Length: 301
Ligand SMILES: NC(=O)c1ccc[n+]([C@@H]2O[C@H](COP(=O)([O-])OP(=O)(O)OC[C@H]3O[C@@H](n4cnc5c(N)ncnc54)[C@H](OP(=O)(O)O)[C@@H]3O)[C@@H](O)[C@H]2O)c1
Image 1 (cartoon, rainbow, N blue to C red):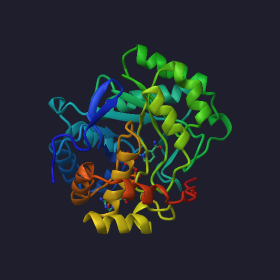
Image 2 (spheres, protein in one colour; image 1 turned 90 degrees about the vertical axis):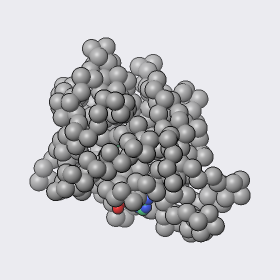
Image 3 (cartoon, rainbow, N blue to C red; image 1 turned 135 degrees about the vertical axis):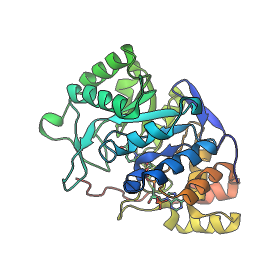
């Protein structure tokens, strides 16, 4: 099923966007089939997606360059990128920390060039405060205020439209609020709900909550939403897929949720967009709310 605004609409950084967006990281897997990556993005736009999450360090600029080629100004897509890491070609882990203020600035410039934009609508400062993922060591342990100073300067210069935070603690978010935070991106899903206090704080502050790994991510070893028995039961009852139930639960959970599920498959893209229309009744929501939180730390580096 298609609809004009998947999941309805909600505010994100002063823009009204469809609540079902698209996370572009999985397009890395289409490195050898650029036409397929472009076709997938075009299909997303055709189905009403107007919020796409990306990063320069997704396959060393490949994903950004695909966005730059596939998205047209008239699509009016809110592109959200992130800084705080860089590609690590040949490394055991494909990315490494790039937290220093001059690295944040350089990364914004790289994003502008590869996306072909004069201004990136939203840029998340990807901290390394909470997992899963790489942690900061040595000169990569940088004070949040020093990073917010360069992010606000970049906003004042017009190179970025708004500032978000990612992989941040509750205290870190509270501390950053005076800088004007548009959105927060931490790992969170039906099976990984350590961030409930932050979801509530974001809702109270008018901040969009844009969880990454909304399905449990693609990395093996992380708990997957679609494996959860209560999710499978609900999916059977609703004639939906478990992934769709997990995404619909997120949309029902809090009005400030925006989804960025990642996929390299057009079929899955269409299913994720259709999840925006799935209605969960009170009994189903209660059974899903009762699913326990699973440990999600994995050795990404
Ligand atoms: N801020 C950060 O630090 C950070 C970190 C990680 C990710 N992100 C962003 O968050 C986005 C989402 O995270 P993610 O892509 O890693 O994880 P995810 O959305 O939780 O899961 C992606 C995995 O689920 C599969 N999938 C997607 N839709 C499906 C469906 N309808 N049915 C069955 N399987 C499905 C995908 O495989 P197929 O390709 O086969 O569909 C892929 O293996 C990323 O794309 C990225 O933009 C941000």
